[in-house]
Amino acid sequence: MEQHHNHNHNHNHNHNHNHSHAIASINKAFITGILLNAAFVVAEFTAGMISGSMSLLSDAGHNLSDIASLILAMLAFRLAKIPPTAKYTYGYKKSTVLVPLLNAIILLVAVGLIIAESIHKLRDPQPVSGGLIIWVAGIGVVINAVTAWLFIKDKEKDLNIKGAYLHMAADALVSAGVVVSGIIIMITGWWIIDPLIGLVVAAVIIYSTWGLLRSSLRLSLDGVPSNVDYNEVTSAIMSDKNVRSVHHMHIWAISTTETAMTAHIVISQTGSMSDVKERLKNVLGSLGIGHVTLEFETDGEKCGDKNNGCAE
Image 1 (tube, rainbow, N blue to C red):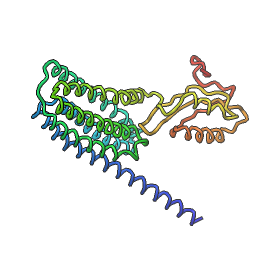
Image 2 (image 1 turned 45 degrees about the vertical axis):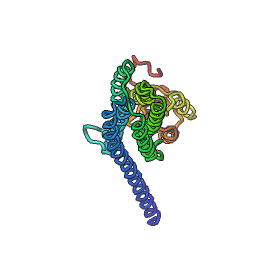
Image 3 (image 1 turned 120 degrees about the vertical axis):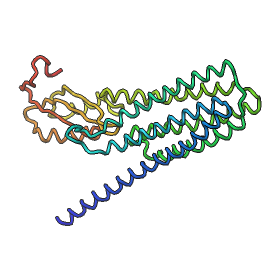
Image 4 (image 1 turned 30 degrees about the vertical axis):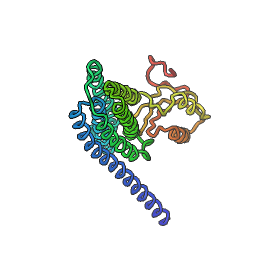
């Protein structure tokens, strides 16, 4: 018995150790990414201002929004670890949902500014230096690719980490596009390419942000997370031999990684409530719902609200 106890203790100790190690590595990835991108934005913005290049300025704006998104994602990641209190019974887990929403809004504002300036430059193309654009954006490709690589192994664990990864990967592509524009300007001397690339960058940002905006908005409104299928959950509950019906079912996200649900379950008289409960919690756990609260009723019982038509 004593041996068994120690084994469990060691297992938990290792689990906690690995878990805190993973958190430390994600934290390090965020901090490294923020510092790398901050240094680059300063350089790119300066180069953009000196050369009057719209593609460099729009890329700098894009990378600046990355720093904001990385800082916000790191903040959400840290806040999610704060334990619950009497006032915030879920802790601050919901911040992991609100942060990507804020992030998406900031990005779309940045895009608006880039589009306005690029259209202005289209009407009145200014001379820009292709060589400078190639150099600065080339460094951007490397920095964004390295930052994306920092998040690659943890990206499926959390919406914020995935957001950071997608962001960086998209940026590496955008910077590559800016390099190409620099090469074209150098060869042809067509300055109008510069604001055109500014507009393309803006389109890429809108496209990559839309999904983030949609999923974070859905979770903010306590919608069913995209990795959970409402109908699949219903049929999983109904497939239990002692379950007669299910109603008042609600599924929502506590954070970007944790899902909760509540439901009223009508069970047949013969079923043992604790057995059914255990079976259902296991099934729901396998569907990605970790926080389950079930209220059980038997066939003849009234569920309290006559007006509501219990088996709705």
